[in-house]
Image (tube, rainbow, N blue to C red; front, side, top):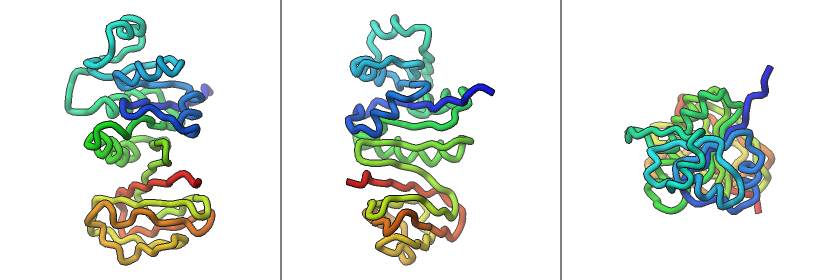
Length: 212
């Protein structure tokens, strides 16, 4: 049976600088670039395996050089990150890691991060976002999650009826009303795992800061 690929999607936000996302970029089986992200990847010394988007910001030089690996999608209902994600699914990945989703315009950052919930629902493999400062992942029901002792953890959900009971975090979340994004940020893991018990199935975004 053929090995299922680890796919890295490189979005067109800030190019990674930290070693963890750069390692993921170097070791990926398949690198899918969102439009002009291909320019940054080539400048870094790596080549894209696929390029996806409407190509409105990709230089004619790279359009010509990589014409055999370009998927041009002009529709504007989805952003280039989502187009790249849907292409990644067709390659039957073992996991999908998204880089470059944050930075530059803040509205793009918020939109890209929130889309991780949609991707995690749709995919049959793990999907996460790496930044220079940590990792975004998603859960949809009660879960026990590994962490480093002292690692900062932030919790986000868009359902203000959700109640989350926590065990293993420095600040209990039991009384938190999730009616604003800041409400459960900057918590801290007390040991090598913590548990979040959800009052009902619901999409929850988690950010694990790098333990420094």
